[in-house]
Image (cartoon, rainbow, N blue to C red; front, side, top):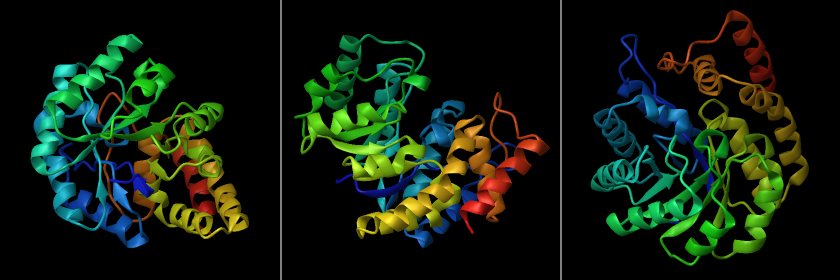
Length: 291
């Protein structure tokens, strides 16, 4: 698999009872395929995997795979709080036919870099899948160091890294150190143009759930060499990105889907819904990005 193009980190719609709404999940997927996205990453943090049972996670992965078929690349989020748990989630994804998984460090336990490297080796040894590393220290509590990447960069089953630290200098350094060995995927949405200028080949993008059209317009302009248009589109999206990063990210992405006519329901507690003021503020910048 080559990490290329726009890969939405999928939301998970819930119905009025709080259960996964598979019909609506299929509708979200179809709307993004219609916009031209290149694949999907279900069961990432935008998908609220941390609030689901193992059975729900499997059911969501199955639904996405059944809907997408061969129409796009698929990367399953299989993270958990321990190596054993991650291996079980990864085995379940592999049984469904997922050949690639997205793996940040296990949450909460704060492994050392030596322990983190051992974790990745254990997953790779246990399950025959390819791995995309995911650096998001704000959520994981630890960063994937260059030492860990040095040790994994020449493993053909470690494809690349989604970089979400918000540190553009780190993204530049990753491309400098590992070009041709690890692919760089944008995970800092407000820095997407900079990431692509510095060698990113893909954007694993939570906002694409509700911004698929402008995100694809940006990507198509950039890959065509039309940097002026790419910059113009990114400028229009930038207020949405900064609004999302200000807090209640998943709630706002789901509300953006609602504004497009895609009902995704509420987030699972402890995440609470948007206030009327937050909805109004987000709607203003959201509509401007689609103008």
